[in-house]
Amino acid sequence: MQVAKDKVVLFHYTLTDDAGTQIDSSREGGEPLAILAGQGSLIAGVEKALEGKSAGDKFQVTVPPEEGYGLRDEGRTQRVPKKYFQDGDKLKPGMVTVLRSQQGMHQVTVVKVGATVIDIDANHPLAGKTLNFDIEITEVRDASEEEVAHGHVHGPGGHHH
Ligand code: ZN
Image (cartoon, rainbow, N blue to C red; front, side, top):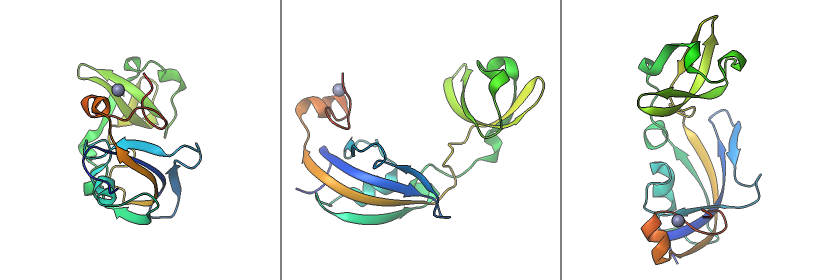
């Protein structure tokens, strides 16, 4: 069975940046990641690379920022009063925290901490990076009607609810 829209795909991946530094790997947790193909749950570059592949396939894919987490937008760096952060006094440069605004919650990276203000970067931490994925597909199966209706996978590697 090949990966196509509304197939459930289980796969292991190791993600490294261009310097060869490992950013993330499903192998550390042991369980492969389970996704419903064609639902936009993955970055475009990986979704595209999985299409047409089968269980047992091993391959590498290099994803440019445009098909990954987007380009960095320097306009998304801001100075914010410390009082808007729940954990403002504990933050240090490089840490990822949550900022509340009228638009909701945002994951941001702390750039600089002042006495009353904090400079943050609202870009995704992987924005602007070329990403190298090492992928091994372990299973491809049909999704159940319920999984298609929910837009996600149930069971191992997926949602439990
Ligand atoms: Zn569900």
